[in-house]
Image (cartoon, rainbow over all chains, first blue to last red; front, side, top):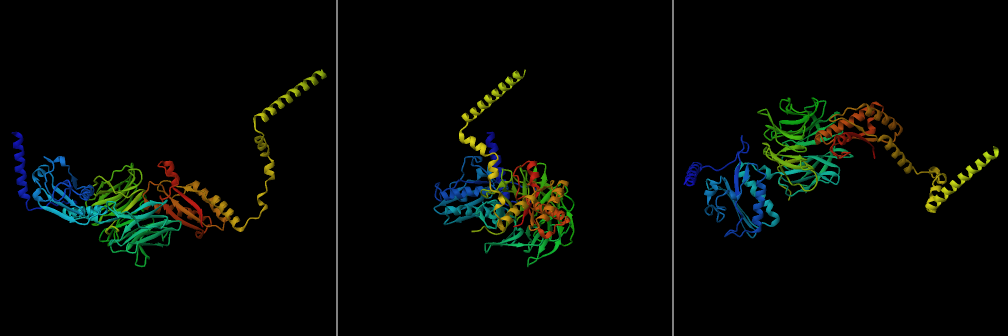
Length: 434
Length: 183
């Protein structure tokens, strides 16, 4: 009797909640304070007319779930959280009993169907029974399934958050090859890993141009440091030598120029190169080391690492006023900053007693928090184009690999990059190479 | 008395001869003949009978290679640094002073100074720090009369550790300047 009353009460509450929400569509504010998790249940893949699903649809479903596991604002729910098990008889809203899903606090439910080379997938909001996203894909083959799954996950993220930079970006990174390092690209989920340079020596510090057409990097060999520029359209790279001894941390500004640390005046300072690749006046010059420039989307704010006050610390240059502010005060060794596109947050590597860790500084609230937790060393942090995800290199599992977390410090997930140490991930807006 | 001493001496000699003969016999018995021969021939004779290395005149290339090898040996000593530092220690200054003398001696060769760091620093800052380390050596050698034109700098940062270990002992080996002859 008590149980019945309880269930009835719950149903009444839910019905009330449903009617009050009827006009709204679920959206997730990934940048809001106190990030909330949305529960999503992926129902077992089935055939369009009955339970028999194609292997492709099953594989698609598994891939989408793997993709969802990278999104910290979504929690994959299990079927055993639902009273009575699978509440669906088909793929569409009419075939789904939403009540047990609502009772199980499932916010979103996804159905996947497939027959032959056809795949269809839908995501419903359980409280409004509204279709949030529905896609069908035809002529999909086995190798295409992960890419189709990534597209679907990207669209789901965009519907929920308005952003999908994580899925739409291509990562460039440096990887050990034959005793040196070469550059590779791949999706943020590690798909389509491709070696893009073959220069010999050590290729480090890749940086994408904002239009995704070029990657700038440093080549180190017995010929010294050279600036490398890889042309995505021509698939070739050119190396250029500068006066002085170094060409460190080349970075594209939003308007397509390159900022790079050169020692043409006797010590490494950051210079902006003109269209003919000639360095102009140094930005925020000093007598000490200055490296690792990173710009916001306006290009007017630049964070960088400098030893001008002793050990390496992070500084911010306002290019309009020329004012340089020190922004890290804790720790003796703060390096490799990355500025969020909106210019509000800086992520950087701090040497702690346990090794390097990634920290985030909010330049508006003037607060700092640790967002990576080792073990080993966490280095080379880099914001994604949305300023939400942060990729970095970590030695937590032995060799150095690339991981991704968010600016909220969500549990880091490894991005698969194949055998060999991988480091210095950089996000670019270019779609993956085909 | 004399006869007694004589007899004693003869007896002693006999005993020594017997002992010597016994030993000799034992040696020849227990070792293969060839082994004994090798041992004997290894002593002085072979050294003396070897042709002297200077009997054949070396070609110019060979002489240069030999000189280069010797120069690399004389110039190759590394110097080491403290963490996040490019300051030369007194030991490093001694090594560099000797290097300056050697560079004056081998005036035909130019050198590459490689600056290296340990893995504790981060990649980009270490590339700059490695340059500072190499530059410190270059400036010191320059003060001792070696023109900058004879020295090239390459900073490898932490890309080429000497010791891949994770201990302070390994790290301290990796924070170094290496000196190589230019090709």
